[in-house]
Amino acid sequence: MTRVLASPSRVFGDCPAGLAVGDEIVIDGTVVRAVKGPLCYVAMSAFTDQVTQIQRRERVTSHLSCPGCSFGSDQENRVVFVLGSEDAWGLSQKFSAYNWGRLDGRATSTSASFCDLSWKLTQAGNYAEAGRAIENALKHLQPDSQPVAIHERIFSRRNQRYAIAIPESYREGQATPLVVALHYGGTVTSFYGAGILAGLIEPALRELEVIIVAPDCQHGNWTNPQSEAEIIELLDCLQRNYSIDARKTLITGYSLGGAGTWYIAARHQDKFAAAIPMAAHPQPDSADIEWEIPLYVIHSRMDEIVPFEETARVVKRLKDKGASVEFVLLDDITHFETERFVAPLRAAVPWIRKAWANERS
Image 1: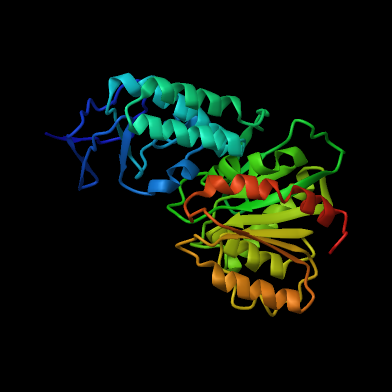
Image 2: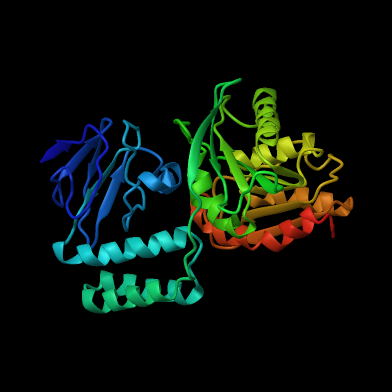
């Protein structure tokens, strides 16, 4: 049987398209066969592992195989869920709850061990024991903290869309740090920057109680004069309209946004007190720049899209020149596992505080 899902669907309890295991699904002209298994399986036309990052957190339905589902509007990344076993639905919801905890960076080594055990038991068909194991995984997540509300705004001068998170502690007249977050690549839908803000930057840096702004890239990438000018104009606009502590600013980004971090931070060291590029190619001139601000570079040896070797070479050259650079090299995270960078970025918080205090190593 072949069925066509013409628009995004939300999932709760049953497959919204009425699909069964073994059905063939036509998505944007591509035929995908539903795979039989103990839990839900997902087929999507685009983005695959990135789907959790491109969804706005407050609009998604979380799920074991994919913690994102769909926007309320028509999108290319249509997702179809197929339930492989009715008996496993409750278990999949517990996995879903655990995945959100992991996405928020609250997973611990103990919770991860219980989750791994639960998955093995699930594959063996032992749902009762698997359920108890995932419940233990949930119990060993770090305590939750309330996420900051994310607002969507348009900078009218350039018609630039941006998402912004303002901490509850913010008070007019009380200087507050500012973080500029540059999103990864992909089809830039409206307020695309909200994905990296909600899925990575805000949960990682929540304890700093900072204003975080995540603009949409309107010019293909962040490493061009047009994008650069828009970022700086937006920054100036925010400093006019909010109580920003100009001594405590940070630019960061992931993948495409990490390359933009290298590029824009180098050219505007008077605007940013520190920079954190993640999973990104340095710029051709990055090693030649006279860096006056500190850098905290995060990359993974397992990155299959942006190999770490060039980043390591640039970091070494900068250190040899006496630049203030910290290099965090991760071991087991692939490029599209953006949410797993929450914990490494959170680990940079003491370094950020030190950079803002102008105590360079």
